[in-house]
Amino acid sequence: MKVRICFLVMLLAPLFYYGVTHLAPAGRAATVSSSFHQLGKTAFERIEKAQQAQNAPDAVFDPCIADAEQAVAIANTAAVTAADKREYTQLVDYLHAVKQDRLLMQASNDSGPVDQGQTIAARNSAERIFR
Image (cartoon, rainbow, N blue to C red; front, side, top):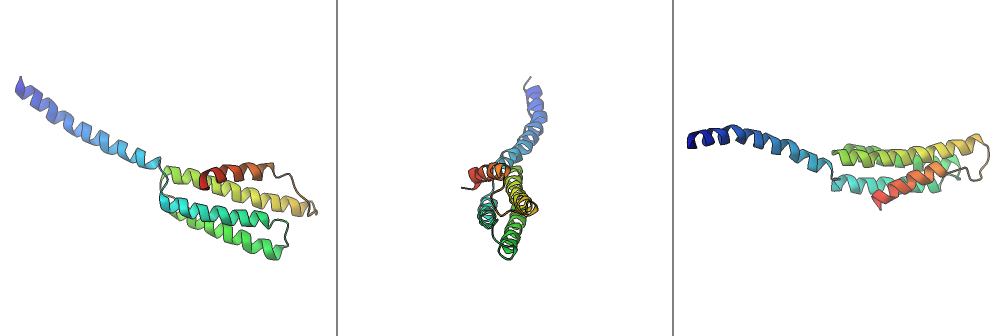
């Protein structure tokens, strides 16, 4: 009887080992890496700066949006885990909403405020993550 139990334990040991090693990365995927979070915070601030320059002339807005796009691209290189990638999509959504509002404002030939509902929602979502 002792021999059967020993064989049973020997057969089940690899199963437990592989089960634990396959579950461990799932825990890491749920957490955001600190390097990505810091780069995301920087990108968020640059997107915010570009949003504030929406009513400014192209000479002011274009460098701001280029700077924000570069910061988002750098944050993308640091996005490793699934949680990083989820937060990265929030940054991209916010960046695209700012660019879309600028295009809508230019298309309407009006420097007044445009319906910024989408931008505000994207900003609030990103702000919850990176503030």
